Length: 184
Length: 326
Ligand code: SF4
Ligand code: SF4
Image (cartoon, rainbow over all chains, first blue to last red; front, side, top):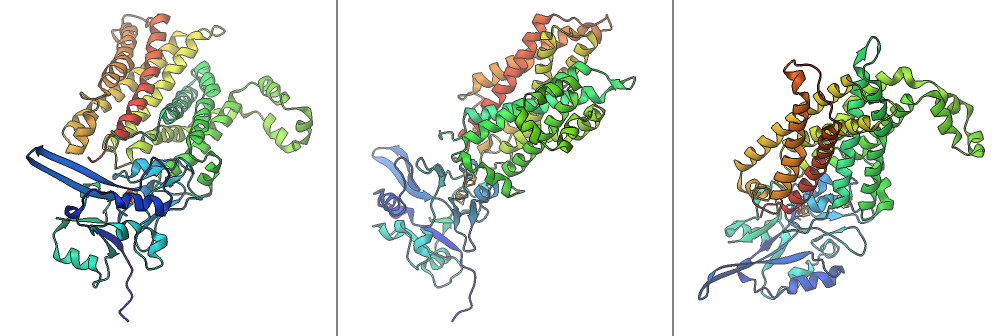
């Protein structure tokens, strides 16, 4: 067996393949019981130009599972935390609902859950990942925009994509070290 | 624009926390300054001591009810996260509030203390251990100065904390500068001073003395000037900063908060009271005799300072949340 290294989960997004069908949003809602009116993922739509010279881009976004998550830093109770494998989660039982983390997230990835009055966000479907499955959005995406995997595993598709394709992260100037990689 | 998740309760909380810090600071200063071995301005000191604990207590109460899970607030006090301003702040507020209570107790006359203790039902009072009762009856007034000294750093920290709570959030360019903490601190001290001006003017039993007004005016003029010279570089720096900060500032420079910021805060809440107070103070500055005390002007100036302090927090809480990296 290969030497065991620490896992570091991340996601690669090939946005050019995205057709804005929103299947990922629906899949996430169903998988994670996300209440009405709030979302864990979204598609950022940008239009430029005038018909017929028109350009449109669709960029799926959710929590970036930052390397230095500012949401975790400001949490006064320790409810927000980062796992060894990089996934950033909320311990719902410890969350007092102060919403400081919502404000401190530069990617606006968190929401106040109107039913439980705690904070919610994308979990990379940690409950599925821990069983060796893929996050629901990844599994659902019909045009295979999303690739989920371990950055530290050289054999993973994610690792190979990042090694061979040009990519960027969103707003690196936030200093958070976001871990959603967008292929160019 | 993003939906704000912190709203008026937070504005009130930041304002009230700062107000207490200001009240305590001025009162402590008035206690600390001595004349012939006695506090130089006992009436100011006493009023400050009587008032200081309440705004911050009310503010903390509001904050707790702004939580999604108010009944979990105790979780704040079973951990300490030194990187979280809110965690540091909660501890700070508790210690500060306790100290303001002790300070208040020290400023009460013995009869007042007994009267207060008599409010406790006899049954309960009988249960209180003798030691505690003795301790409560102890004359703390000798400790006024010591308590005041101990409270200085706490009051200043609370004033700073209300700004750091916002300033330490790097995701919000409108807040993320080291000037916000100072701005909030000096605004807090100024609102405290203004409140004491109001209280002293309305105190019919011990009419305000000229020396007291001179003390309060001097203090307030200094504080407003410092605040002004923090707001100015805040705007200039922001304008010369990176795009995200410029975009954030655009909200007060032509955006939705322009009127509130320039007219209500800077015009009415900062410069107008400064001009009024300077006008009242002019004879002293020019060596032409004692300052005027025109109660109407003084009350207007003090009221405007308090309004300005509130508006400042309003603008920062809302404009800050609307700012971001895109
Ligand atoms: S994107 Fe926001 S919520 Fe997610 S880890 Fe980064 S700072 Fe935290
Ligand atoms: S809302 Fe919950 S998770 Fe977020 S900072 Fe407050 S306690 Fe932490």
